[in-house]
Amino acid sequence: MVTRPSPPPPAATAALYAALLIPFKPLVLIPGLTEMRPAAAIPLVAGLLFGPAGAVGAALGNLLGDFFGTLGWGSIFGLGGNFLLAYIPYRLIRASDKEYLASWRGLVLVEATVVLAAAACGLFIGWGGDLLGLAPFAALGNVIVANNIIYPAILGPLLLKALDKRVRALGLLYPDVLDVAPGRRPWTFALGLILIIVACVGGMVAGNFISLGVEGQGLFASGFGPDFHPGTVGAGVAPFIALLVVGVILI
Image 1 (cartoon, rainbow, N blue to C red):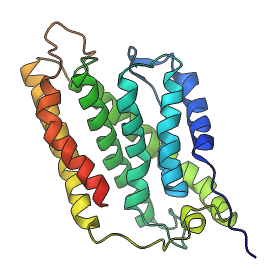
Image 2 (tube, rainbow, N blue to C red; image 1 turned 45 degrees about the horizontal axis):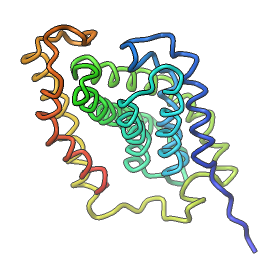
Image 3 (cartoon, one colour; image 1 turned 90 degrees about the vertical axis):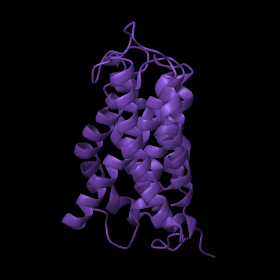
Image 4 (cartoon, helix red, strand yellow; image 1 turned 60 degrees about the horizontal axis):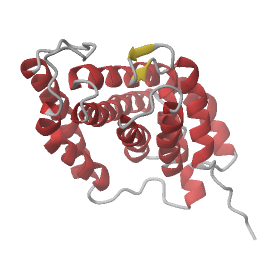
């Protein structure tokens, strides 16, 4: 009888993610909401290697990290945003018998996925933060997108290069653990991808336009000026959030 290897539980990814987030909590970018996050490379790697378990672990790890300075109602949206940060790469890049970075094409694909996942995360959390009146979209959304592009784009490939072969050798890559065909995609995949791209591009443009035009906030503004009207962007960006959710379901 062959015993199938058990995947690293979401708790393991969550603990690692939180452990790398916590030391950077004092390096605040928006008080009470976000900070410098080199650990943002973890969701990308966890999603590509461990699939759904990695995505759940990324969401829980962010929540655990929030207990050390940024816990609040916005943490609810942080759960969703960090889940997307790992789940979108997992669904968009098919695992195969070759390592993710076996070619330059693989590297380009990983970097492109980093940008899309970061936009989805920033859109979702920025929308939620504005809806709750925590900070305007032009501040929170843009800072989160920048954080989640810069660090994963640089550190993500390095971590993948170091871990991919080892994880495969142990039989812990998600297709091995879940016993699924690695290249199989749902017939709705193309439509889902289009909806995600439209949601991210349209939502970020609309969110910044409303935030900059109506509220008079500067790009990457601190977000606590007298012109901030909570909920303005929340209502305007809601249709793009709906598209994003539907797209994620379809991929």
